[in-house]
Amino acid sequence: MRNGALTALMAGLVLAAVPTSATAAPADLDRRIEESRRVLREVMASPDHGIPAELLSKAKAIAVYPNVLNGAFIVGGRYGRGVVLARDEKLGWSPVAFSTIAGGSFGLQIGGQATDVVLVVLNERGLDALLSNNVKLGADVSVTAGPWGRQSETGTDLYLKAMMLSYARSRGVFAGIALNGAVLTQDGESNFLYYGRKLGTADIVIGRQVEAQPSSKPLIEDLGQHDEVWERIRPSGHDVKHRANVTADYEGEITSIDLSAGLLTLIDEKTAMERKAGANKRVRYDRQSLTNLRVGDRVRVYLESKGKAERASSIVKLS
View 1 (cartoon, one colour):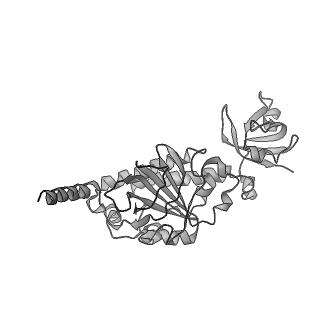
View 2: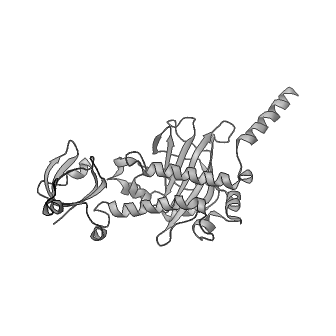
């Protein structure tokens, strides 16, 4: 009897510990969206340790699962709830649909604490899988640990053929990580609570049968702003014609290059013509990309950051 009572008590604790969408209140869904926004904002604000801007700009869809929990009482060891958004070339980012993730191996480096998980979908096959229900990563859809930070600036093309890229962050460390075995499930009950009608993921993010709700608009706007920034700073090798519509921060002749420091100096012609002080500009740039430049080259410089530590996102060599 004592063992039976203990078993019943533990079962009750498990049910209480794992939240279900059936008991979720609209405020809980608003918080889930806001937490997803927090994760993405922190990722996009960290060029050295986040998802490469190019990959995020080419995403067909994105899924964000903040605070994925670990516990022995959960089958597979992990459980989390998040949101899914898809992008249309003309319409932009969609309203949010709700989703859950369960099980799977998050890797030894993550440990047992709560983890933020982001999936970046890069092609139509990956999008079709994301729109399905009970999709098992690594079996129903291929998933690859994504590159992160500046390490991938010259190698993102290697990842663009992947169906999904996976990332996880724990204790402030964000990196690509394999999520084989994790199962993604549509959270239809949360969709119903949030929109007031029965909807699947495809109805929301592809069919756009509902309007974006006020609590999700900041997340959608953040993603749209990221796309606009990438359009401005994309490197010269990516659609050079686009540069004709963007004003360079500096334009002039390179006077020195310091590969060891990742620095170049140029005379900004506009500043010189206006006879302003400080026509000599010192700009940081990727060392490997600097090897393609020479003293005397005339270039246009597009800055990623301004101020004392100016860094170029791209430099276009002029003929």
